[in-house]
Length: 298
Image 1 (spheres, rainbow, N blue to C red):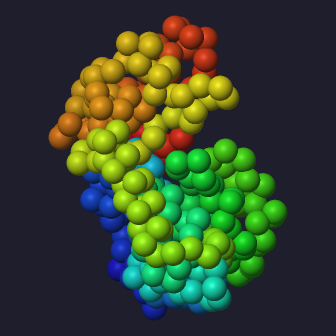
Image 2 (image 1 turned 180 degrees about the vertical axis):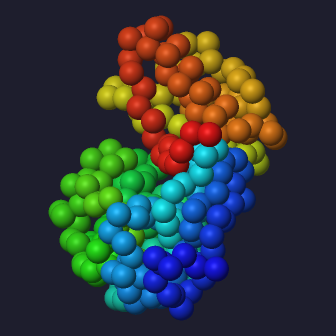
């Protein structure tokens, strides 16, 4: 039964929905409500009618996320298939749905002869996440390719924001709390599909070699401080392979945390905090979390 305070929807709305299966760490609690809108109008109407006091959070592929064990209060919005679209709009630009994966965007760009988006191949996330976090890898980031994005604000209003309205810095934007990115316009440069594919292959191979891709992980844990690599600081502080409960610092890439099988989100987060403490003690540098931590402690 829907709570009387929740608006009706055309998409799917579930109460007490487990989030662990939807995030890479495979750990954490449930969403009070999980909403998968049918389209942007469905999302807009729902948020407009939803009590403004109810918190709203967007969920992409769940790769860069710790969902705490007490779950997430309010509504978690997950953009499914209707938002996983990528279409060329001219010779060098693509209109991408907020739920489209980096692999879909980069391969569509390749087929259209659009270069400059190859780096998205290596980021395990969706367009909405890239736009919010200024996602990047291999020397490129979202701000290098974004022209504009369409978002549904917490009020339900749909607005188009140009690049310079997003206040981009390293792995950060000023996108308002509760706003959901429903589409983005990316622009590259003309390229040869074969050369684009070769660059995607190079990136994929580099990633395979250096990152623990076959594990339950959350991607890069900490931001690189100015002039430093986070992984090197973690290594120098003696944290390679460090374990806490069911969580471990990857031996392959020390800026990755792993769920060895039965870790709670509390294990994973506590391990990250212990790494931060040891790095601070060893080098005096304060590591900042890159992984988002959401929800309530149990």
